[in-house]
Image 1: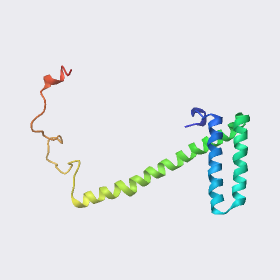
Image 2: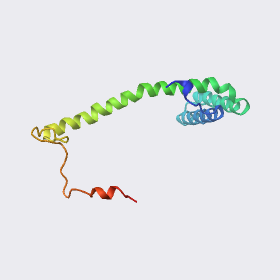
Image 3: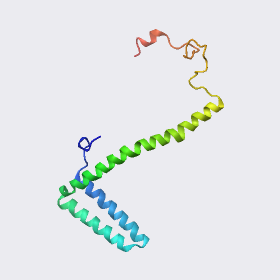
Image 4: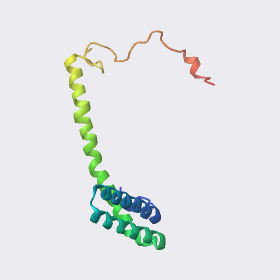
Length: 133
């Protein structure tokens, strides 16, 4: 997916979000005792708040950069997470099912004419599908 195909959030929302992020991290560092870092983050939060209120169009390059970083992370992380899920969850379960002797697809019946399950009773009559309502 390209950045041109993605609709960016408004610059004002982007600025408000990062203002709150910087305020939250400044508060965290203040509680941890690192006042120098908290002051820097507080000033950064104030600058973001002022730019958001006065002229939010200045945040467009940062907004695009942030969104492209998110798209890049999505392209990289999604296959890693899904591959890990497959290899560390589904593959061991399949090996255990084979060791136990389960045949969920019923492929061991080589002499079977069909792999369909026979149903008792056979199900609804064909006429019930003509006038459903």
